[in-house]
Length: 269
Image (cartoon, rainbow, N blue to C red; front, side, top):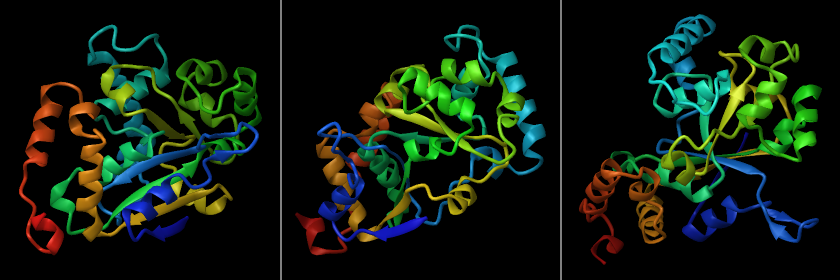
């Protein structure tokens, strides 16, 4: 995966919107999904893989028991992919990875943890349209039939109703991007989508290394994080918006009023 180290807010902004121009539309419409992390050392391992152990076995146990104990009416309709999205949304280890259509939402997650301001942050960017060109024919046909670039649970369910049938679509590993249902305001405000690998222990990093899918890591220097954070706050990209409710409000206020260490001339302004 290509890595670029940005040098300023303007450089970062330019890189986030690189390749967004669509000449056939005459519009700026990016085909990239974004994922922000506070530590540039992070990779694209899923929470299921990070849990350790036998991923296929654990995945079945986790999701089955989540469905058993979760309150009724948690998903729009009974589907493996809806339940998986709901589980990921509430912190269960899954094969999904969180992404967003919004580069600024990704920047929020790269700068939200002030305790990580001594480390470089990163925004991962991946072209999900090109990624889907490598999907099995049945999945590509489903997208073309809907005139869509990403899957919904309904679309994916018509082609593969469960983990086993998804894996059987191709002998080689593949990845798709799944747009979750609007489970709550948090999903909507974060402009969320998920990447979904065809195998529970598959690595998106390794898959990208094997295929020519446009993807890059934008590394944010530690010394730039405060400026990025302040400008996101000014643009109303905050916990108050992205985590609606009193918890999000409290998280925003706690961070917003945290004094900045006076380590350079800008800190006193």
